[in-house]
Structure formats: structure tokens, C-alpha cells
Length: 223
Ligand code: CA
View 1 (cartoon, rainbow, N blue to C red):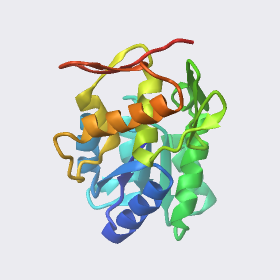
View 2: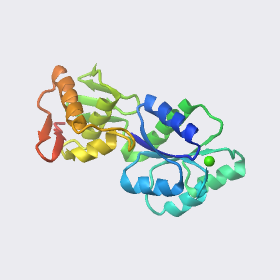
View 3: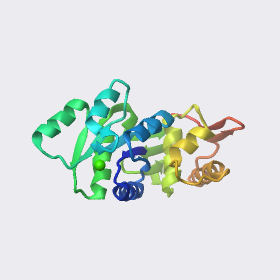
View 4: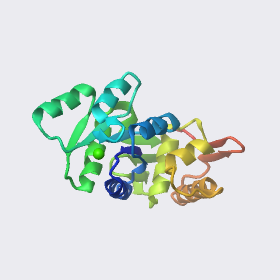
């Protein structure tokens, strides 16, 4: 799950990113609306956390302009908690609200609820053959036994399961698993794929995660 944090208060944005990471969300930060536009053009996000007062404009007005294009669900962060302002936000296409100050962990809880409500992308249980993944609980099982996966291994498994039966390119994996600002070593994707494959082998699911040389990776869909 990848979140775009649009917030000009640098320290708050960093704390949020840290709290979200603990809950298994990768995030990128945009300090302005124009940076948000760039980020949305460059990557796919599962949700947006949107501050309403940005240096280059008003978050609600931006949202109204952007709503014609399809946007992921939006959780607005605002100091304005009055009823009329909330109604204006809902009209503009805000999916949920959090009034400042708030606990960073609450953002993760709200996002999970939002993603659960937001339709096909948030299918709660994914399955491919004997492998099941509970997206909200961040738990993968093989025939009922829990796999002991790191956060990134789980993110990778989720990505491959969502596209089971199709080849997922190395670039797509890199984009989904790593934020813009994290250092990605050339072999990072290969390394994490081979760790995930090892976990699956150990759980008795061999030969389902294929390397398609020069193209990417494919998880067999044997359901
Ligand atoms: Ca602000």
C-alpha cells in the first residue's frame, strides 16, 4: 500500500510517514500541490493524506479541480473542524477527515478503514492457490499456516497476488515497494523476490513464483 502525504509542515509529514511505515504503508511526501501533481503523474497511490492549507493553494479547491481525473481515496487533515467546513470538504470529494491535532497512529487506522471501503483495490482477502493474504491484517498464510514475512516481502506478495497470472515488471515492483527518497540498490528487487520464494518453498509452495528473464516476475494463479 502506497500513500501520498501532501503536507507542508515538514516535521509533521515526517512523523506521519514514520507512523504509516510502522503500519505497513510506504509513503511519499509532497510539500505543495504542484509537487502532489508531479507525484500523482509519476506513481500509483492507494490513498492521499491531504493537508488543506498548502503554500501554493487550498487543498479543497485543488481536490475539486482534480476530481474529474480519477483519484485514490482522500483523507483530509485539517485545523478547520467546523461542520460547514466538513460539509464543504465532503462536497469537494474528501472521503474522511481528521482534525489537527491528532495521533499519527490514528491516520493509519483511518486509512485502513478508507481502503477497506474503497472497492475492488481493497479486496480484504486475496488468494492464489494455497496462498491467502489478509490485506488489512497484513497476514499471509499457506493452507492456514502463517508465513513469517517482513513488511516488504508482504508488500511484494500482495503486489504479485493482485496480478496473479500476469508478469509484473521489475520497475513496477521497485516503484510499489520503495519510496522516491529511499536508496534502492541495483539488486534489491532480485534479493527480495528470492527471499519471498524461499519463504514459499519452506511453506511447501514451490515453483509458483517465476522469474521471466528480462521482463519481470510472475506468480502462478492456480486457483
Ligand atoms: Ca499547512
